[in-house]
Length: 186
Image (cartoon, rainbow, N blue to C red; front, side, top):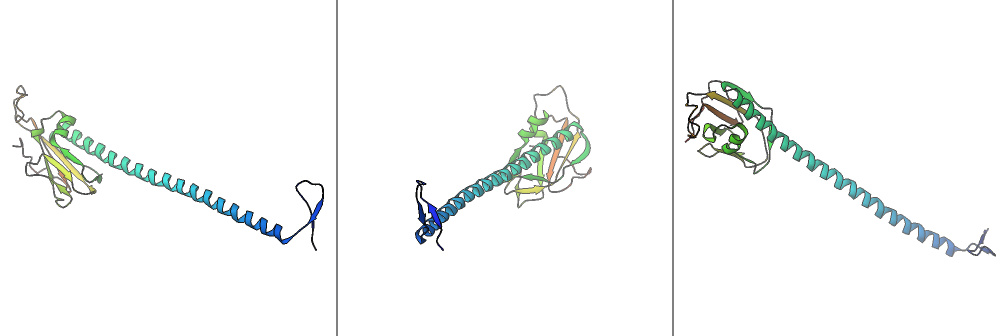
């Protein structure tokens, strides 16, 4: 009924006792707790990797939207024939702000020759001067841009109100060829 065991010295056999069973059970419990700690640490590490990856993908989407917006404005300014350029739905972060100075730096057209407008007043702030667009919350929106050529004096580059090209950028609604540009902006 009882089996013989050799002790650690290997010299003499000894009989199995219930104490040996108790000692093995305690070791097994300690080992399972240790494995559980290791498994939970690995699970936490995987969760951190997934969350940081999702955050990176979100940043990439926001950066891509800003890049697409810039490309839309630049394309429109390079075709000042009244043609309307429309974007796919773009995503902007809360607090993201664009000014007509940004558009000037992208296109080399005076900031006075650009205007912003929006039909999404709850999600955006466009002041009466139409020189800035600020997103009040994370917002998905389609953008339209249109530029028209105007009579100007191309030799008078020092006058910022001398707009040879006037552009309008509208958030939340598609511009039409009939929509007028207000240029130069005061």
